[in-house]
Length: 121
Image (cartoon, one colour):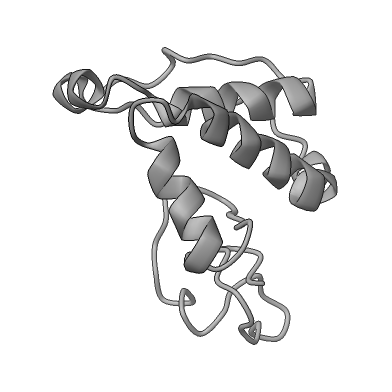
């Protein structure tokens, strides 16, 4: 997995934390990771978490990420966890905000401050 963009099964450039998929890209973040490829059951879980009644799925995804990538996330020594905000219209239509539930689960698991209103859309 690329240490910079989180792409799976890619070759890193020697001496760099970049892969062929992202070595020329400019990001506004330092690192990324993924729970797995976005297909099959994982894709179904993510999509279900985005809909009304999907709160248990968002919590489950957060716990799965901690279980499978917790050591990696701890090694990054993050200062805090904040969700990427959802537009208020989309939030009202979905009646769920999986990003906030997911981020809150990660913050608790990593024992880091959770700041849900740090970033505004």
